[in-house]
Image 1: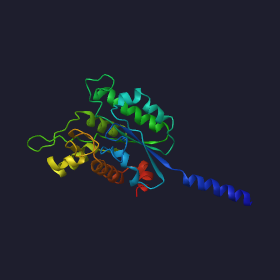
Image 2: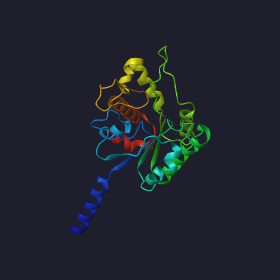
Image 3: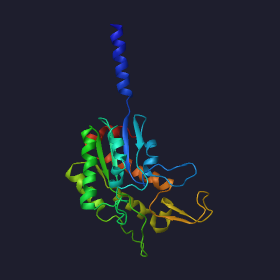
Image 4: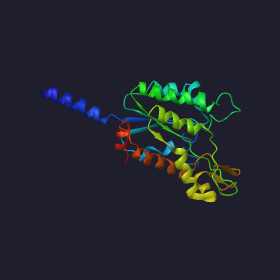
Length: 247
């Protein structure tokens, strides 16, 4: 009898200690950067783990320069799909590189290939009993001379919204919330969210740096906080376990 009790306790402890994996897929705005102690550039998914308790494991699979097309064609998605298990989550945020119309290896028409690639990610995630969460691309710091933040992503965010609506996918409109973030800082202070350095100002760069797409640690952390805040507000029972894992 004691033996059965011990076995039951062991099984229970293993079950309770199992971590939920949160995979993040996307481009350089999310991806882990080399030499993070020196490199001022950070992806927002790179700094996501500290927002969660130990039972949620963030596995950042975003890759610099990838579109939905190249992420699939280079087997980045297949390597994740094979590991997906019931109860996992997948954050899906693409668009920046799908826009590269001069590059046939990355460009996708937003209304055709981009849309169907998103649908593929959603359907195949669900096939494994995992939960997809769609996010629109983060806004670029693109203020005009009047101080108006001008959008740069065309119809890609629209298609993300439509796929989320049609397939009833939990959705975070990250473009909208990062627009608000950029606007709250304004044309000059918003440089702090990105990579703006004069030559010699930062040891990592030996020349002037003015990058309005990629993120500083400050910008990445602010966006990770936005994502976590929006998860809390999602009205979808499939994300309850993820909500409970937030610190």
